[in-house]
Image (tube, rainbow, N blue to C red; front, side, top):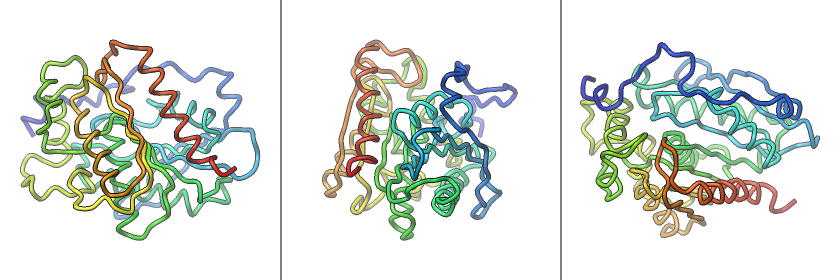
Length: 297
């Protein structure tokens, strides 16, 4: 894995992958936050963190949240402000998945853990106080790949019904052959070199790429028919921009409802150039999830 580590070094001797502001006391007071474990499927039990608004009572919609980090970094606590904010903004229970990380646990460990978390969430509907008829999945970056792959897996296996998929700057295609990949070689933050290293860590350096599973790279799917309605959010300066847009166009061509929002001046994992456009995009992204889960209420 020498080339993978040269392109995307993976260091484990840090307490957290990214410094984040802690949840405020005001936000914590509005949430019940619990740690649970989902029975593993072909692997160990999967830790999840559940964020439930203290109000309103009664069955709430549920969002399965899959964090980003190039398949190699992160845990739910690194994104607690995002998940807590989503729970409160949408009015939903958020179940954040602590999936196993590459390169120690390459594909399919992460998607297996997400599948296990999905099955547990649905089976625990009474305990969690959720309405499984209003279930969405969301993920950012590598989490977007896992969210999209989970929708494919659920369709193919006849699993629980997913009402909506919300993909934020998703990585979708391991072939790295788009114009945005070529344009972002020297970008700040996560760039084309990091994208190459990410896939090498996740898939292994010796995997024949024509054999890549669509449950790893959803762009490899031969059909996108029958998938849940989607929101696909991309960044104008992101190396992953074009694969996200192509996936959204593929959904539309397959007859799947899809909303697409591209933010100009937005890097991947670096300060954006247009903060107002990003704020508008994030608000639209959250509003779309809320609308999908509360539309008939």
